[in-house]
Amino acid sequence: MPAVRWWIAALLFFSSVINYVDRQVLSVAAPAITRELRISAVEYSYVLQAFLIPYTLMYVGSGWLVDRWGTRRSLAAFMSWWSAANMLHGAAQSAVGLGVGRFLLGLGEPGNFMAGFRAISEWYAPKEKAFVNGLLNGGSAVGAIIAPPLVAWLTLSYGWRWAFVVTGAFGFVWLAAWLWIVPTQPPAAAAASGARVPWLRLLAMRETWALLAPRFVSDPVWWFYLFWLPKYLADQRHFTLAEIGLLAWMPYLAADLGALLAGGLSGWLVARGWPVLRARQAGMLPFALMMPVSVLIPSASANVALVLICVVTFAHMAWKTNLQTVTNDVFPTSVVGSVSGIIAFGSGLGGTLFTNLTGWTVQNFSYDAIFYVMGFLHPAAFVIHRLLIREPKCN
Image 1 (cartoon, helix red, strand yellow):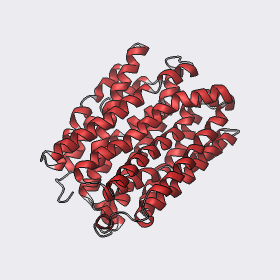
Image 2 (cartoon, helix red, strand yellow):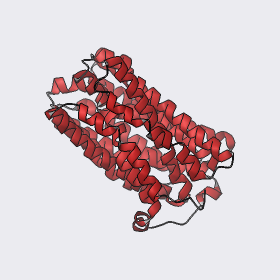
Image 3 (spheres, one colour):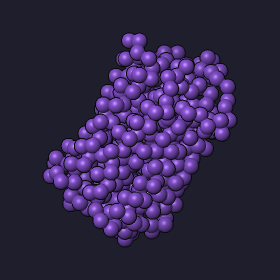
Image 4 (cartoon, helix red, strand yellow):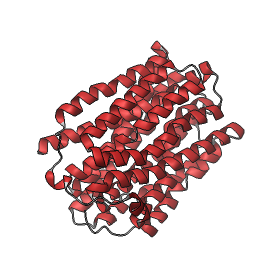
């Protein structure tokens, strides 16, 4: 079923696009929302945590559901839930109401990636996995690219409430295509690949920590740019909402290019006989070493700062794509959903803690210290990964 395989890849790409458009509506419209609802920086960080806490916890739960329901059914259920939750934001009358919508959104959105990781294990060969992971991550970046101009236009034209309703409706269009195209059963060999492993055993495995710990350390950078960039541009650089819509998509385009380039690079190396782990790390180290440019952002002009932010998001997504693909390399298909959930829990936990730190730092000091810290997280994460990981015994 070669044609179906690439239709599935396209649908995984677009599910990530929708996933990130939906979560970005709040951050793009934040200047208008916080002004209308009179939400402070600390209260805004609490609203973000109302998403991040269930999002983090449901990484584990959604991975478990994906391994038991299968890719087709689970992703359909998650898409339906988070699309409806996104539309519900439009009814919020306070920070609490907004937090309720974020909480429900956070329960559904992790399933997109858990189902995507399992689909990659089911449908694609080792040399293709990094590329399709790049599409999955690239869809995230494309969603983040689309969100600023789209949400800014909807907010300026119809109000921020309609921005949530319209973007939430996209998911139900995708749902019809998913149910129509994706077979009810994956390839027989993939479906039978590997035995189930208890969570506690997965958690005790060195390979799990070689992926969880680096994500805990490095992913807060992405959470910052995802949730705080429009507010930073408005607060610190004095961008208007129209200017945010015009320019804030650029870092996410850079991230998209990073995901596709790094995924293609390690896949190309694997196809030429490189050991899988060595190929993935070759797609990680150069980009980890690019991240310290973050320390230059606070002192740069607005235009130069935007360019440096693009460099950072490009490097982060290139790094993450290859680190994420190692999960498919070292674990059998039968547990990819569960172990991906455990690893992503570390990502969400790091993001939650860092978001809280960001809110407090911005309220009491400035954004500068945040950029200084973010410059050194990826090099530290790479060292942790190298100390813990071992060459996979199976692909």
